[in-house]
Structures are given as C-alpha cells and as structure tokens.
Image 1 (tube, rainbow, N blue to C red):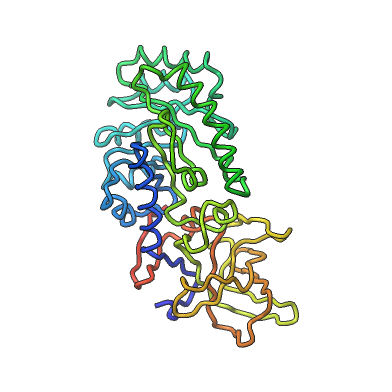
Image 2 (image 1 turned 90 degrees about the vertical axis):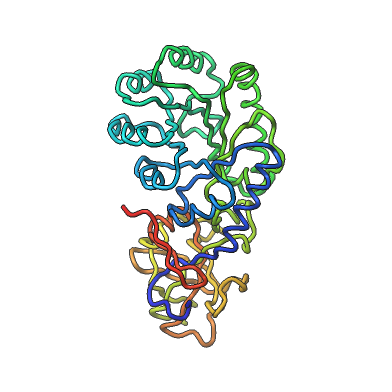
Length: 363
C-alpha cells in the first residue's frame, strides 16, 4: 500500500499504538488508579474502540465539539479545558445524555453554571502545580476553599475533585528532567491532599504523556491519569525521553518533487498544512521531522537519512546527511513528525499499515 501513495499521507501502525495503550493500562492497574486517556491526539471513533476493547470506560477531550463527537460511543467524558460559558447550550444538550465533567477555576463560572444548567453536572477545579498556563495556584488554599464552600451550596453541581496538567514536562530534555518536575509537582499535590482532600471523596486527576511514560509507581494521592499523546508518540516525545523511536506509531509519507544535489537537499510535497510549524532543536538545527527512506516496510528502518529543515504551506525542504545516490523525483520519504497531535489534527485521516482508511473527527 505504501508504494501507491501519491500525496502526503499519515500512516498508522495499529500494533505499535495498541502496545503503547496496553503498557499504560498495565501501569494503571498495577497502581489501582483510573486511566482516563485523552482523545485529542487521535480524534477517531474507530481508534477509540481500540481503547474500549481493552477495558477503558472513561475518556478525556479538549473541546465540546470533541465531546459531542465521542458521545456517540462514550458516556463518561471529562472536558479538560476551562468552561466557555458562551457554549452553555451545547453543555446542556450533552448533559441530557452523558456524564460530562466540567472544568472551572472561578466562583463566577460556578455561579453561572448553577444558574444556567438544565441538568446536573460534575465539576472539577483546575489547579496549577507549576505549569503556569491555567488553573488556580495549588498553594492558594484560601481561593480553593472559597470555591469548595460555594460548591456546597449548589443543587445542580457536584465538585468531584481537582485536575492538574503538568505541561511543563514537555520542555524536558531527559528522563531525569521529567522525574524532577513530577517530583516537585507531587510535593505540592501531597501537601494539597493533606490540607484539602483527606477524609473526602474528592478525586485528584493528573495527566501528561512524559510523566505517564516514565512513572511506574504512583503515590496514593493520585486517583486518575489522563495521558493522550502516548497512543502515537512523536519526535518531541523521543527527544524528551518519553519513548524510543520504535514506539512511535505514525509516519508521514511524502513524495519528492525536486532534488538539489548541490546543497544536499530535496523538496517534498508536505509542508506546514500537513506537519504544522512545530519544531525541535537538535545540534542548533530546527527540525520539523526525522526523514527515512520509504521502502515496503517503513517501520523497520530506524536510521534517519536526514531531517525536515523547513516547511512553508505545501513545501517541505529535506536536508540529507548524505543525499541518497538513487534518489529521484517521485520517490517517497517517510518522516516522523515533531508533534503527532497537531499532525493528526491537520491530516484528518489515517492509512493503516494494512491499507485501511480511518477517518477522524471533521471540522
């Protein structure tokens, strides 16, 4: 099937993806915690059934549109994005048919929901343990207690627990970095648990692929984990130390359209609208993807022959370590993308290694 590709195509290895899922399930069962995977990476009902077949019953999404899409097959969904109160109509529609756990970080939103919800809902308080993106500072116990006390007065809302995303692990460059960030976060979480959660039914939910990839033993203060990217992994996760190259379940396969031997480069049909403009830095070079030759088995070749150095809209420029002798226009190159979540979101469908097309959620 690979040699029939005529334009940029996102190829998925189901076996590798399933192995990644199974590893995380084993860890969650070992620690007796809930695995609520984030589906924003794959955005596919069919891939969702792979999780369901392995016993997963609860999921995470990043938008109400995604919640609507997955509500066709899932009835316990956490929206891991602060409530946009302008979407209250959609929230009420979803709450009429599924359990939708909503995320908030202010008394104002709490009061708005209580006044405008037509169905009962669970809410989670977003806490910041060091990332600095959204959420109440986990050490601001006064603000947290204020929201807890307000929630006790609500009839339509139940404060189910607290959600934390340590997204700063994505800036790590080694397993030691990941473990250090996780350790610092856990100190704050354990203190918070002692002061707020002890002797209550509140859940503490954490989730970031780097730490979920390297942590085997969780402390009892953690009740739930929400990794997403690890279903596929990508080059950024490899650089961090979350995975090995052979754990990455996707490849972008792109045609060569022109060759520039004088500068050891080629132009591919595959640019920013296919890969995004996310990059990592390796040896001071911007890298938008690692490039491999594309034979009949793109999964067996783990030796890169170059890297994607630049992307514009449809163009991608490949820099070879040494330009292949028999490279010509029309050849296919296999590329590991930097950010699988964005890559998948742009491509909207997968070609499996056995030739099947898997559709994703549409815009």
